[in-house]
Length: 118
Image (cartoon, rainbow, N blue to C red; front, side, top):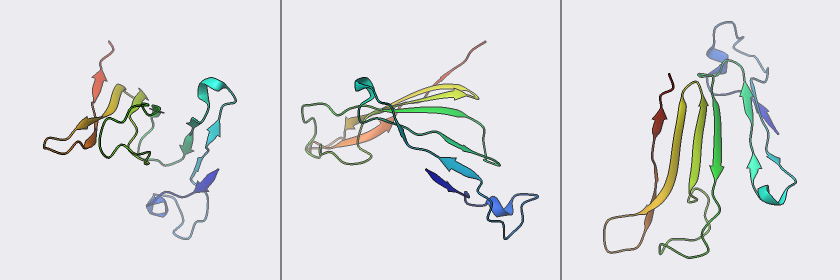
């Protein structure tokens, strides 16, 4: 669990400049199920945050085959699926795609799809 203040919290109206009140909390939870093995659920909640939203970020497991020369298990290189549930419905899958050129190197790109619901 991480508790603290986000940058700029003490500049919010009505907040004392020397305040040590915690303004947010983040947890890293794991589900005891083989389906979710090694996958964390990270809820973050706080007050005075810039936006009110609900997001789900699903990090996909790496492929057994090496697709790119730089395909080593490194943080930030995994494909993922980003779902924003509120205030707008957004689906944003991200995948590594081959960079133009001779070398076989992949760059992570997020594809943003906003879904309009009437």
